[in-house]
Image (cartoon, rainbow, N blue to C red; front, side):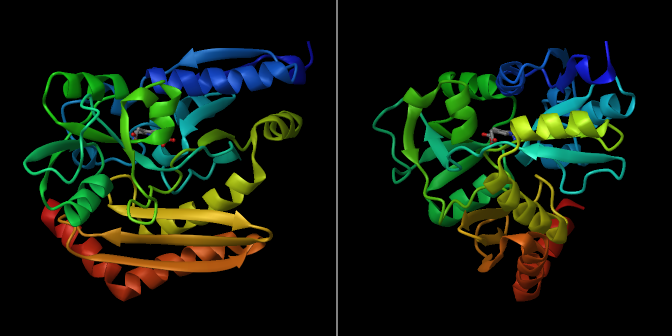
Length: 312
Ligand SMILES: NCc1[nH]cc(CCC(=O)O)c1CC(=O)O
């Protein structure tokens, strides 16, 4: 069997969401006539569930072990939620494809179909500092509480009555078929999503043979999403923020232009800096950098310094 006919070995985390995403990728590849094998790899983010993500601290808590597999050539590609991928990819690896993004909103999930964020004395669980900060900003009546674990764990905590509602990314809710529990779609102009939310990223070693890379990219990459994600991730790099920083960014492409809105919010939601910029789509990296530098200069640097000081 020639090198290019060997099955594609796909590495993935073992959570139900990760497996859904991996089977989605596998089906696309099989549809293109490629053979696939799936390898489940546990990451620190899956194992350490008793601490919030910003306290685990290390970059790439959901990716490191997968990246080791790419380096050791035990897998050919790693499937990630683009949002979970650190902004700086190691020198010897690359992102081969960003798959077509689905609806990017955050949503409210509750077992009470009458639930409203306007109510008094309600407890809402979130897993991200961004959602918690935005919740505090727009709904000071709400008590924002920490809610970690995979989607099933979070839903179980909601069912157990630890919260009146939780906030999640629509993409994960949809993939896990929990749409019936959505009580509200949060608007993206207020709850601007995290960079990369809703897209699946495919990572590989730079040394993967070119014909393999080309076949995979042709099958999995979505050009419009790719341009947008490059802009958002360039912004994230400039802000030096991973998933532990309450930054947000959403790019959209119209014709040959990409527009991006992004910024940062203080942990208590009191201060927020945002800006929107537009550029031709072949300048998305510079666009994201420009947005990041604007945000830092407009006071974002102070917000980030305060967050670092609060955690130190
Ligand atoms: N950090 C966990 C995570 N990573 C990706 C998703 C959902 C899917 C996506 O945004 O692409 C989620 C769950 C959530 O944020 O509610």
